Length: 392
Image (cartoon, rainbow, N blue to C red; front, top):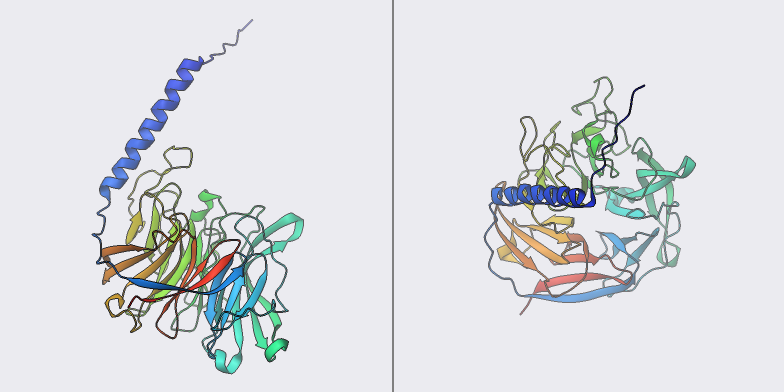
């Protein structure tokens, strides 16, 4: 008769093992910090803050209309028009039902490049799907009517992230029109990190689609068996910022890391950005997440933050109000509740200024307005639309 032997670890051994695990994770995190050459501080910029509008419920994105008004999305599922003097319209009719759970809801919004002629608006949202599932989708609609009769009509969902998933995390969701007229969409990995490397899923990817939602023929994985043809790059975690660098016409995205390791990435066609194989953060438990910080065939970030700032929203500054900011990259921070100004020399970050340290609100979106001012949305229950100008 055979006997089974059960080995139980004593509470003391378990405690020592936990201490050892945390110590190893801390050492690994310290190594990651040591690898980062932190950009020196940029000269301070005195700024004035104007509260243009408030009482917005968790606003997510703002887009500037040609007549000086703004479209603003609210995560629970509303889109409003805001006038320059801060008046809010009623919620525009025509917004579809959203899965307003966790980080989900009504998210980014951009105007079509030919908006003045077409009146087309594109927006992303977490779409409710069968069986309690959801996923990031992109819709196209038309802004119609005048005054109190303005509405969204002719709605068409042109892209659906596949597969669907049950949960409320990591929708990604920034939109950017490229100079060639195609639309770029950032997609989170739905907190299912291993699938960011799976080309058969849209999770943890940047996708590139035509204005009608199709995959352009020159996308890198068109025709590859088992790969989604819309994919442009992969190995991303939760990119909530995207913008085209006007100096190079190249896409930049910024994505959330876990405990540290938020990344600024310059996105190349077909490239792998490493999540979760490489990175500079650790798990929320303190455990090590990645094989290393580098691996052949995987891209390094242009810049990263340890500890995390929780970046969301970005804009390349090209205006005249802040002449010293021209060519700089502005990045919002949710956890740190600040605005970061990154001074660039080509693809290199050579200096950084942290603004709004005492403001105390989560910065969700960052845009340059037609007036050259910097416009921000604060992600709060009583969210605000802010306008930044030089302090006289």
